[in-house]
Image (cartoon, rainbow, N blue to C red; front, side, top):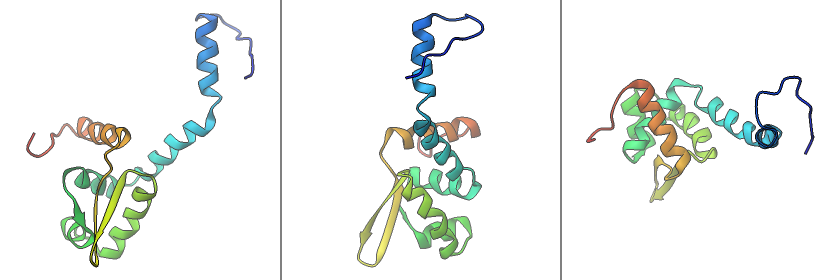
Length: 122
């Protein structure tokens, strides 16, 4: 932990030390930046939001978004790698849904608040 002397004193020293400890943990901020990069694409946000409300296969997601299956698969990969969505296989078919994690739920809520929409059935 590094100790810095601030030019201006607006906060309590213990408060500044706690904040500095967190600011120095750049790896945590990188995780957030990576998730926002993934969500920096309209199609991925649409897919994520859709999967917050239903479990679907690539074919159905493709039909709902009027996109090709390969294009949808291309967008599903980073969402899955980030842990925002999960999949399960049933025979040849793979089904996707939003992960049941605090991060995924928070992002779902954030999307709906920004868009000022409510969940279907809510």
